[in-house]
Image: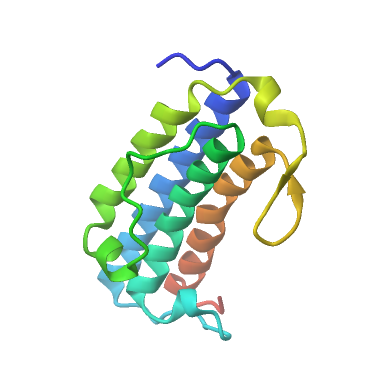
Length: 155
């Protein structure tokens, strides 16, 4: 697939690599029946379903938000917010999200992704590029957390 922007192509490739790496760790975590990370009041850790749902719905959300910010709304992805529904089909859901990244982000130009003018839900001003970088790091952080649990270390 041709991308207008090498930066976007690289971020999509990195995101795919990191989300797939997270899924490898996730499968190990499930197989080991390892304890959940300390919730510390975060609903994302209420259950295994909530955690995988959080990671995958966030991946979808970064892509959808990026496209909204450049005026190309995404209407062809599963927009469920039910963590149990996502968890029940996490492999297929992840593949659909990864395919949507390529399908929707390929048209973005470097100029569209650079300007820091978009307000996040938490109030920060960001560029699309920064949001996509966050999308790369998010599964990395959760993967590291699960790897620590699997190694018997504190999360």
